[in-house]
Amino acid sequence: MSTRKGGLGRGLDSLIPTSLSAPLITNTGVTIADQGEVDINAIIPNPKQPRTIFDTEALAELSASIKEVGVLQPPVVRDIGGGRYELIMGERRLRASKLAGLKTIPVIIRQTPDNELLREALIENIHRSQLNPLEEGAAYAQLLNDFNCTHDELATKLGRSRPLISNTMRLLNLPPTVQRKVAAGVISAGHARALLGLTDESEIEKLANRIVAEGLSVRATEEAVAIHSPKKKSATGKSGKATASGETLAAAELLSDYLDTRVSVQGVTGKGKIVIEFAGREDLQRIVDLIEGK
Image (cartoon, rainbow, N blue to C red; front, side, top):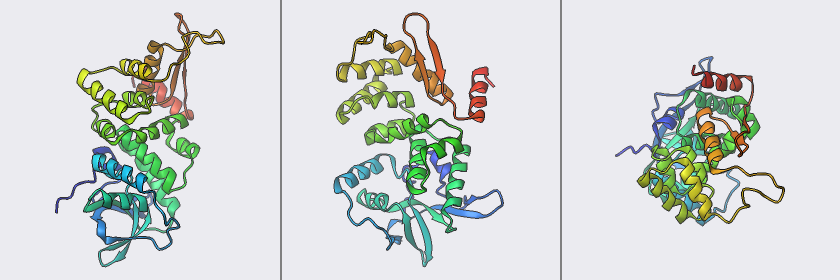
């Protein structure tokens, strides 16, 4: 049987490896979970699952996404013997994967009843992994949804700003075909965030194709989005204050991508200020090191 890796990129594969030889282990040597790819029909539903009704349209959308980029948030299961597994978290993902026609599915095979330990192990793995923006957003979403992390808690533990985590997760709202381009590195996170300024899925896909075909910069993408978006206030609003130009928005986007945090550039008449957000002392030092080229 072909062991399609569920569309996992190399980065997410290191976060939640699909090889059973790469367990999640604590610093004290305790195995928290194994990871692997199992027969999708070997997973039985959790009898304690409180949800009994699943939105068919939402399932179809998730199924389309899985066909394009795979299962970015592996369900959590426990081994019940005989080559079978009981689902603990992720029934919607499991149903959508079956709808997508997957024969196997990447899973986290929990070895401990302690969700706190598993959550901490996954957070620690984000630190050690090189994830693309889409994979990173999926990892955040899984920790928030499956393991009851808050945005603030996750930001503190990862040493990243809360807005960065929220904005990265927003990339999961892109159409599946565009998500695949982000996962493959064909378009950057800056381009992807700019595309989120559009609401029509077909328009997003058309502009994403233009980015690839014409090599549009992030600034050019933002300008294209502005043309298609509802009319905004002119450069000088009712308050008389100038709004950010395309140039300052592009500069902010470039700095945000480079520094891996939210950056705003204020001022459009020749002078202004740059505001860089940081989540704590370690994050501040990380930003300083980047600026100094260390």
